[in-house]
Length: 310
Image 1 (cartoon, rainbow, N blue to C red):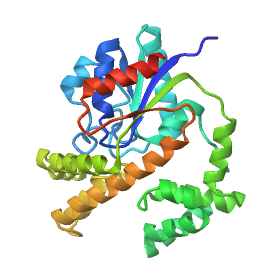
Image 2 (image 1 turned 180 degrees about the vertical axis):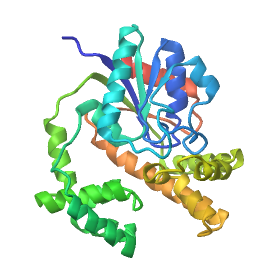
Image 3 (image 1 turned 90 degrees about the vertical axis):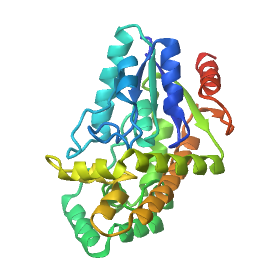
Image 4 (image 1 turned 30 degrees about the vertical axis):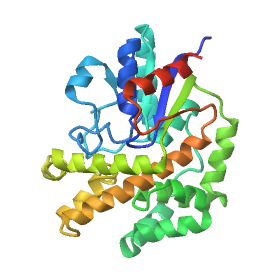
């Protein structure tokens, strides 16, 4: 049976991959499947750099605006939703363009789910109690001692993933990063994936991150976050952990000034970009497009397209 071809474009945050994917979708008459754990949420537009309504009318986008911010979303559900979207696009005879930077979703799309040991409610309850007393950062520090690889990929505020990594170690005695590496080496491709990643040097990414954060603040990120907090259902724990939203929430609660929140967004976005680069380097079969600071979207699209077609 012929495997469905998926043209996958990766890149760390602020590298310009969304604009390149949009340009390629225009050229190839394709449809875009978002591989992003936060663009799934409705009304979280500015802080996620979501495609505009006009862009979404022009090019079909999938897995955007499918949940309320109060809802949670799992890797398993993402794979189900992405599979359904890919099947539908392929049935229409159109190219599939998967684009995003949530690397756990990328790995799930290409190789499936790492199951690991079953959940341990009692142990999780203990971790939640510790997080309430000591803070999530303390649990992240413990994870860094037993599994530096996992700690490097997980944000210190991401309690859900810290909890799971500690739970796996507690149940199996093995770091989750080691078990995931074994799973990755043994798993087989789910699609005929042509994987290309856009790469920029750190100084250029840092500059682009600073510009993006300023543009988000100017566009009304603070108002967007306040509206989410005031809206029906509020904002759930998972959505509230998103970089850009977590920092503004703390500001609105009086825990920091706006200037401090903006600076923390820049710091945390750079950390996210570093973690994404680490993941991408581990992805087998990835080919790279090095983007110099002055490269245009069209030029980058040319290079990506050549690699997809070679």
